[in-house]
Length: 228
Image (cartoon, rainbow, N blue to C red; front, side):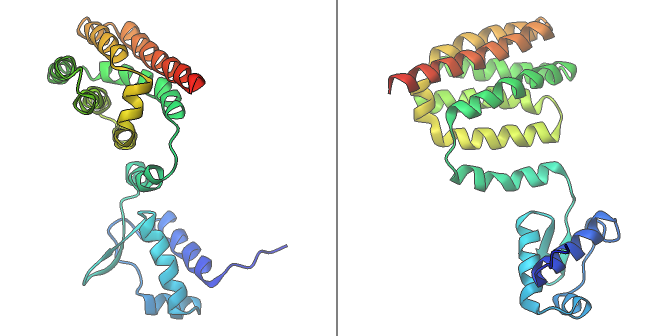
């Protein structure tokens, strides 16, 4: 049985085929609304609906005065578009911590492969600022975010960096819950020993400590959840 596409879906599929086949390459200006309407025998409203969807997904970009062009199709570009959706949805702190356990364990490995003294200096700086702002939940978690983000950026992997920035952008909206459910002691201890393992270039230990850090944070959050 053949499923009949709506006019808007017809336009969407046509454009995607052109992009995936590389007929329309990144930075290429695509056909105008009038041309697409005539080519596919659909209304301009249907064309506009399809274009708006592709722009929202980051696949196309509307340039004033120069029409609509194909974007660079990098995974990091698409991940950035997920943030508004994720930020507006209900984010379960436990689910985020579960994801971070495996995500950041791998990040430490990549960070160590690209070891850079400047990044290690930044980790020290943010650790010290965390200690100094122990009683200020907002500043404390800001430096906590920066510590983990230095590790993500030190992987030199654009997908890891984008995911990390997206995660911490969401977590910033949950600072009070994070401070209450996990507590500052966990990160103060683990950031210190993770930093020491990194300085010793002990990949296995640094990765293991990062995993334990987030597992303990998750356990604390679950204990608080059971009590409430």
